[in-house]
Length: 186
Image (tube, rainbow, N blue to C red; front, side, top):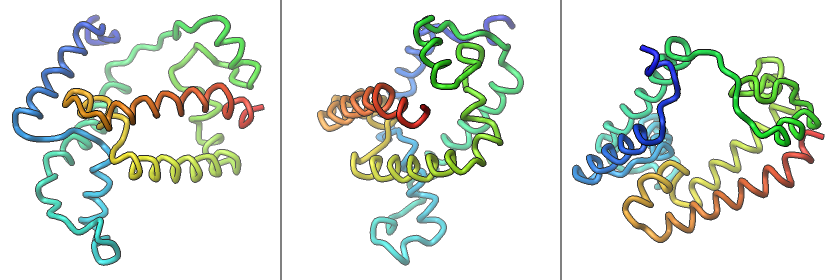
């Protein structure tokens, strides 16, 4: 039981991801979470307003099960399989985060300063969520997929556009954390 409650090592999870990708490729499927939003919008009738949402959504039912499994799996992992543990962060990172106002840096996976109801319902956080949501949605559409689709599925298919997208994701993440994050949280 201790094995289940601890984070699984890369040599277990890596081959499991590879096995899932092999099975998806074998059955002619592509993995990606953002395509589910398109499917849900199509089911909701968005095809009346945009040609992008006019497609046979029933071919994507299997991918909706992936989302459902992700939600259920996340719930089970958080409430039944997690044990409280301190994060092993570099002391310089902890000091930098504390300077930005994150007092529990290294004490939990998600900082309460960002992920509590008080934080989410503040004006600043709502603005960040709306702008961030728009940028993520725009970027996902512009890049032709999300990080999981490009980094896991696209790279395993050896697709050059996915490699370019993943490089862009990393550059964007570095710009965000080193330049924009301090501006937003100072």
